[in-house]
Amino acid sequence: MLAGMDIKPFRPDDVAELEQWADLVNAAAAVDAPWSHPTTARQGADRFEHGWDGEPETPYLGTSDGEAVAWGSLATSEYDNLDLAFIHVEVHPVHRRRGHGTTMLAHLLEEARGLGRTSIVADAWDTEAGHAFAAHHGFERKLASINRRQVLADVDWAELTRRYDAALPHGADYVIEKWPVPTPDDRLDALAEMAAAINDAPLDDLDYEDEVFTGARMRAYEVAAAGRRERLYRLVARHLPTGDLAAQTVVAVEIDHPERGHQHDTSVTRAHRGHRLGLLLKTDMLRWLAAEEPQLQLIDTWNAESNDHMIGVNEVLGYRVMGREWAYQRPLDQP
Image: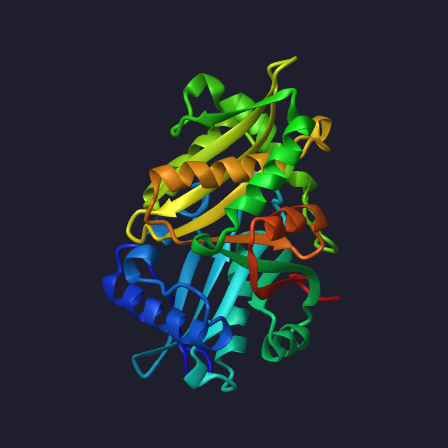
């Protein structure tokens, strides 16, 4: 028991705790990010079992007198960035400013210390309360990311087609291909090599090593997406003179809520930039989704606020700014 709050980890099969978690997350989102899609206990179970690519975070529930007042999570990776721990702290709006966030943070930092991690990254929506909490605990703002949303009913297809046709001559040496999911075993390594291009996306002041992509990690990502009940759609651009994979874009559609989609990776390898491949890929993806997922209404995406190139592409596609999230960082043990 810490400061009137009991903190315990919970598992993907802990039904009661997942229901409490979902209620808390939705209550917090109603205040901090009211545009967010509501979450469910089922989605939490999938998330905490599979993670993004097979390395799920560990969630913790903080209760007081049997009521969920806060939750937190701790994530680490064995692929890369072996010094980092990623944490999240959220307090129910009714129970804020009572020390529950500080208590949860202290617990997560101790857990990270036990894992041998030395640098902590935390995230929060762009709010005065979030900034104040982070600063009070020694975290510095490092990276601003923007959540944008595309409303498919509002897409200006005539204008998008005009932009697409104008971009085509720049990509004359490339062909856009539908990529099979799951990826055949003999194509995983080539996919991983291309996926590493995402390491060139801006991270501003975040102290973060390049991610290490392997065929095994690409497979783990696909397996995790299926476990989270998402259908993946991947398009790649292939360079005709060499046969090399030059670029990709990936969208996930929620199986239980097929009106909602999520833009995952869009990246172009260094040798093939400057050919409008991002616009060509993302436009072709919209056409593909219109045929395969006619019930799809919304697609969310995230970009670093400083990623001017990809933001420009998204603005052509009609994405709207929904909100800003900050990544904060500090050494685990402050000097």
